Length: 503
Image: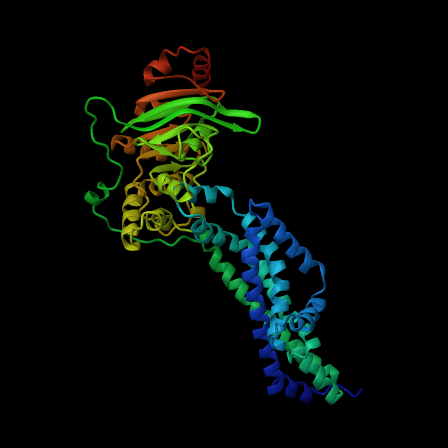
């Protein structure tokens, strides 16, 4: 072979034939990747289905297309589909083979991405009453995208090169065209070097695009976007949960009767009866593991009670029949019911892919049907009310613990619930910021909000609670006025617990 022919290399590099073949490679690889990504986006969640038949079907699909060579699959589609009466063009056959094969890889990538999103994110969406598909689309998938992006880009780079296998069915992509030119010119080194430059260029573009998208997705970890908001103080005061003064006998808004919940072999909640009056603040205390948080989760059916009934404003909650514990209301009804029972979680459970403003506004928009402009105006008022006027554009990772919990409280209040449930709202906070959240909760109590608060903050109970409930081993062992329970406890376990708090 003679020396390197630079002019031939440059001519081939920019020749219309090579450019056309490169373009064919790009669009075939892109379309095939899109097909595979679409398949993976459907199959990935199906792999996590609670239905065994669905999981079995996805496993068979992955086993078949990950276990056989891609070249064999291309030849199979090319030779067998016409025998079955399905006659596709050569390009369509190639796209189908590449896409279906890629779908098997993308399914595992999507599944891994979904598993990387904490389940608490879905629970927070469910507690607002969001439909399952909205929880998936608005909350879970955008967060999973961070874990999905890198392997997706890697697969796309592979797909660009995998199109070369279509040469076996005569698709004129880059490698096949290069082979033909090499044979006709008897200069393979220059020809394949030019093809390599084109492949490297394509992959470089993919890598740059990946980097740009990653930077965009990671915006929540960079400096926050500050937005100014000027809201009149009188408007801020209009936002909240107001309760009219009670006259005569108290109106019961939330009632639980004989609630029992087993977690494996442990009875986490046992035969609990509880009634909450309108405007009442009830604090639930007790040792760790006494069933306090599980009771709250049973009240809004994040955990379905094994026995007992819950009533919200006199209507059955979660169950369709008081006599038949197994008969639950349809999911659509349960979502509407949950929207009336605000939940504030111990670990905040803010939607990591949404800023503070959108965290608060998404529930009223998607569940209550509010217009975006109205819901965001209301969200701004609430955030300003709780001292977060400069945090509208901040993402959860940019907020302190106290700020996160105040956003979480604003999110719950934005739904205008009948009752608010607080699951140890200060236990995940540093001591110096606990007062931020407690001050917010005191303000809600002054406004007449109906609240059930699981907490160890006895000072808060003394200052705000109308009643205190003590739990131990899943049961209520004592309840009554705060002063009576804290200063004159009757049950030995209550005495022991109060003493441990004072130690």
